[in-house]
Amino acid sequence: MNNRIVIDTSVFVGALIGSQGPSRELIRRCLLSEYQPLMGNALFAEYEAVVGRKEIISQCLLSRTEVISLLEALMSVCEWINIYYLWRPNLRDEGDNHLIELAISGNAHYIATNNVKDFQGTELIFPHLSILKPEHLLRG
Image (cartoon, rainbow, N blue to C red; front, side):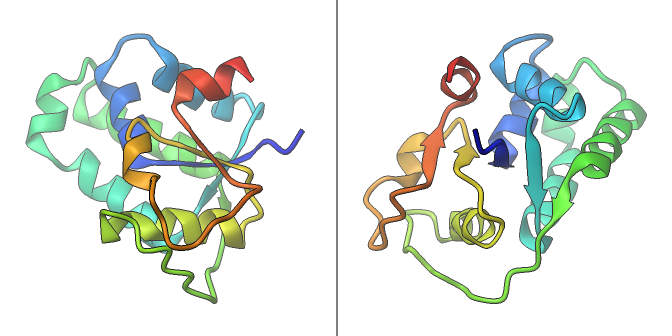
């Protein structure tokens, strides 16, 4: 099984806000090396922006310091992928195209997201890449 995955920011936010649930469980499994999360420049910038948002921190059970520690722990298990070719599958949200590019460049088979509908109807098709909610990925 290919356990290389890209974790959308929505999953990281879900893990921060929820005291339990599939998003938190997926992050936990990444920290335990059951999955190999991939990271790139654009995704890292999104993660950094999220941990700085007051509306996210106000809903979080963790302190700001604990959130940063969790982000640092996740980054320590991520494999950094350099993206040399931009695929531009033309997703509804142009800002999500980088996730497909990261997955393709890093040979991932999965993108974990809570916004699956945002990845439907692309102009480019990648048959080996599955876009799944954390709960569906964990069941697999």
